[in-house]
Amino acid sequence: MPDQSTCRVCAGTVTEFLDLGDQPLSDAFRLPDDTSPEFSYRLAVGACDGCAMVQLMEEVPREKMFHQDYPYLSQGSAVMREHFRALAERFLSTELAGDDPFVVELGCNDGTMLRTVADAGVRHLGVEPSGAVADLAAEAGVRVRKDFFEESTALSIRDQDGPADLVYAANTFCHIPYVDSILRGVVALLKPGGAFVFEDPYLGDIVEQTSFDQIYDEHFFLFSATSVDAMARGHGLELVDVERLPVHGGEVRYTLALPGARTPSAAVAALLAEEKARGLHDRAVLDAFGDKVRQIRTDLLALLTDLKAKGERVVGYGATAKSATVTNLCGIGPDLVEFISDTTPAKQHRLAPGSGIPVRPPAAFADPYPGYALLFAWNHAAEIMAKEEAFREAGGKWILYVPDVHVV
Ligand code: SAM
Ligand code: TMP
Ligand code: ZN
Image 1 (spheres, rainbow, N blue to C red):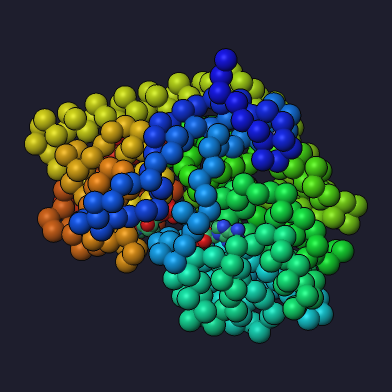
Image 2 (image 1 turned 45 degrees about the horizontal axis):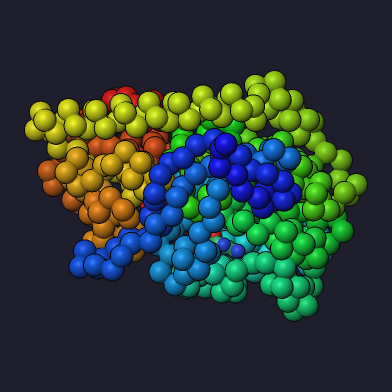
């Protein structure tokens, strides 16, 4: 009998299809002298027999992940900065073009999206529980409330600021298991013609590219049009638009509205049909995904072990939350990957969770260049490879493990 749990969307039965083993908190970078026991949980993923939603089998308490020292910064990628600037401009000329508009962003982080809205003088509020990143947003002129968004927060915002034209969340809604409370809050907060827009990693891309490292504690749900459509219907909303995005290895931006308020776009029916045609939610497809993950684990460990035997240096590039899943699934430690280069101040001079691989500032990467760089931030490959041309010119090679293990 496979392991089962209760669906956080529809209370149906979730049946496990992949176990990625014991894992640490993916963003808990530890000081080198920290000897306290490391938190761990079983990272396994399943699909709901009722609504198809793909979700983790075990939930990590939110305060363990999102707190004062949460290190991730939205501004860490130039491509993402431009992505959010362009989106904010689009919102300003569409959803926020009416009279005295108001937008609420869940998980505004360092304010990368909302600073464009703030600069335009448009009413806004970022809701961000992680203290240090919320402070950065405030310093950038963004109005921010240090809180978890949930129904009570939504009601209090509505009391203070009135209803919203737009509720937006990037790489945040999939982090939140308590869907009921969030969607009741969204419904209470939105104007009758308003929209809830969110973008998150797309199950279709994860399965197609075997990007299994998108599965970690913070990514509680792996959304698809099929599962989001069912979730919206079950919570008094309607899926009215979908847009595929190239960022973060493939995402979908979903637009939900109150039922009947907007005409669903042709893109919704097209993506639903595409998911059905490719059998995205079929058990056989999800099982085949699991087989490919196990192959990548075997191949990556073999490659790194071989390079070590040949005396080659391998350095990791980008101490992503995703990298925790890879290193801890494969058993990759500092013996195989000397250190990880990363631009995020709050990750540097610490040890990566579970694996204990040291994280160093980018200057260490070139001092001197290693023979091989394991690209954990593969979702930013174009940006990083363009920036690191000197590494290639020095004879360096990139190791990638998505969609399979290869060296370029
Ligand atoms: N939106 C930014 C982006 O796309 O770069 C940040 C994404 S970051 C991966 C997820 C953010 O969601 C974190 O800053 C975290 O503190 C925040 N978060 C987690 N739970 C939340 C909740 N219930 N309400 C609002 N924000 C939340
Ligand atoms: P993400 O894939 O979750 O956005 O995380 C990317 C990580 O990689 C983040 O810790 C910042 C780091 N990074 C670099 O070190 N150099 C870079 O050029 C980019 C784009 C990201
Ligand atoms: Zn369900």
